[in-house]
Amino acid sequence: MNAPDYATLIDAETWAFIRATESWYPPETATFSIDRQRAIYDAMCRAFHRGYPAGVAATDRAFGGVPCRIYEAALPRATVVYFHGGGFVVGGLSSHDDVCAEICASSHCRVVSVDYRLAPEHHHPAHFDDALAATRAAAANFGGALILAGDSAGGNLAAAVAHAGRRDPLDLRGQVLIYPGLGGARDRGSYLTHANAPMLTADDVDFYARTRFADGREPAGDPTALPLRDHDFSGLPPTLVFAAECDPLCDDGPAYAARVRQAGGHAHAIVEHGLVHGYLRARHTVGRAAASFAAICDGIGALARDEIPWRGAL
Image 1 (cartoon, rainbow, N blue to C red):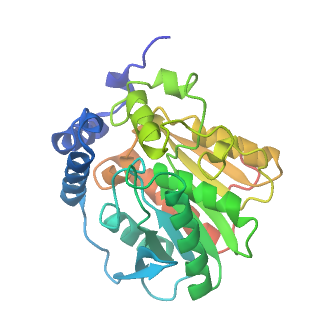
Image 2: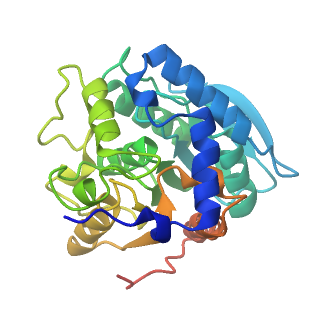
């Protein structure tokens, strides 16, 4: 299999973002100790932090015993429960702080960011348990419609909660998954084509999977861990997925959307040309990432209005 020509596939703006990221978070970071990984990741996130839009305020409180941060502006249309990325190993309330504030301002929604427990101190299902508990508590506290959202590992948790939420009286208006890892087969497709992509490699994916599970192995049929391996995709809320083309995880999002549609649901997947894993942090410097982030916020806003603008789209 021929390796992609990233020199031409990825534009100059995105390459500048990649180099800036690597100056803080070297490509070999996943080989370092967990404490060092977290320190490096936190420093990188601080360096890329863009502050809050005018009118957005944030407060910290627990939901379902899970630390959370609530972002609010005037008259929210709905509540977005957001799960951060980081491979279930790094990240927290600060890592996606400005992203959540901007989603709040752009979508006119309240955003509840969830600080779920991380591996290896806490293996699966701790992350999922926290995600579900926080979602249920946010629903009970705020009432009204909920939208689930998350990037990377957080996209996995959003989908897992959506699957489990079919058993709850939750008013799930939709889910928005951003370059999610959902449990696709790692011996084919984008996992091979983009095994050595900038920003995230197949080896990195393997490391995070080994770290997440107590025995180092992915469970075969557990949708709370790997939503793409569920046997039932019926009854899920409208689903919008954004995948980065230059990413081992690229195929997971479109495959998941296809399964939702096959089960009779509304789902749409967008593969963002030339973008890489983690491009949310490029939303102010890379045109392609800015356009994608605007589409993410527009999608959340549409779901909050109980609209499905991609209805019938492939």
